[in-house]
Image (cartoon, rainbow, N blue to C red; front, side, top):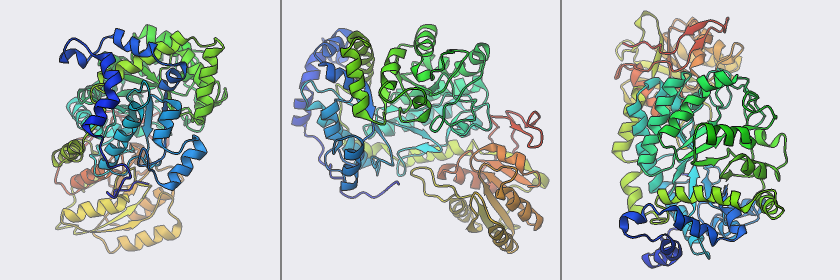
Length: 610
């Protein structure tokens, strides 16, 4: 869905200096302080004055963060206009802001918001202009999910880094901080000021279908250190980081997008396992925390999801952990938050629980009016809304949105996807690749002994903004390193005929590299690897998502964990295979035996080298 073209965006005119001054005159005057130093950090009395002048409808709007289709704030493609009319009842982002006075907008690649960096900057400027030109207009907090690894909404040519579990394998706080600093600078240059990252979940369940490699690992101390480092990097670049998903989504086998998970941890286990990364994020000054749509009976036995739980969000997060920053829900379109209550009740209950930002409701008009009605009928007080709005305005002020809401194309050119940033991503990735098996010192492969390499295996859909497919990227990287490499995609569920074709091709190669993706005991991928090994050719498996694949591949003589199939991680794995760099990654999660999951095959911290 990602278009790297740089054609006319339909919103290329950057606001003039005169327009900027006119649009921001009201809020700037309201926030004026004694001197320039104070203007960057206005005090609460001035922010409260802004709140006091807002209508109730404007207050309700400030609580919502909404999706919108289109690459331009005012002139999106017709298909995006049609999608907006169908889902939101407006034509454009500018109309969305005018009708609902939303406080935030979230960007998605599938909503065609993120074609390329210059267009993204234009879209951000168009949204800000549309909002600031309204009576009592306020800057918009633009957000996205840029976790890196397998979840990224802004792709090439922006810099894409290894994902969290890969960073966990590298184990470097400095690398995590560098990732946040560079990624934050690039997002800010495009007008995105809130990133829904890092993931603070401690992934202790290998069957977790929704977190997995999005987590730094299974050791809460290690996860805590990396979360804090990444927060420091992002926020040092002027972008609000967001620790997610509170109170912890790391031990579930249900995806909250499609179901309602239950975490059965005791209160004591939660304190020891799930809480530490959130405590670390709070200690690091985290700007926002995202809620999880799951039930934790030990923390609240009402049967409500954490997003709607006052005992969890106010009792624990606010009062026990002392957090007074912005609390944002996970998407309100996810099944986990919609199972028990209707879409009209969810936003009201979330606010009563202690939430400040209501993210991406499936029906904005229904949700917006439900909150408005709840205030008018006394279920919610206006003072309750004011408390959340004040937190949101404090964050907007901290991020400089009142002072400088627009971005320039020069900043995009100087910052996004620079050679130095791309090189930093490659260096970080080289420290993450983990060597788990290397019988007979098969690796590194020798160009003299193994000049012809066949690359086969799974080719899952490429993560946003990367080139893909994985077999092609691996083959291309090995080719650039001096091998004659050929790619043959066999998919995530190869048939007997596909396996036979791969085996035949392997007989003409000197070595085989096979990309694996979440291998199971009955998987065709497992049969593929076994039959490739039976050819007698040297076989190297590269687990391109979960490192647990190695447990299902006892016959493979060499196995690497790359933790993702993004370009930067696949290139790093190719350099390790070729011996250009030594493998330095260490498992951030334990790998259990396939035949006895109670037994650990490879513990946390395991990893070979050359």
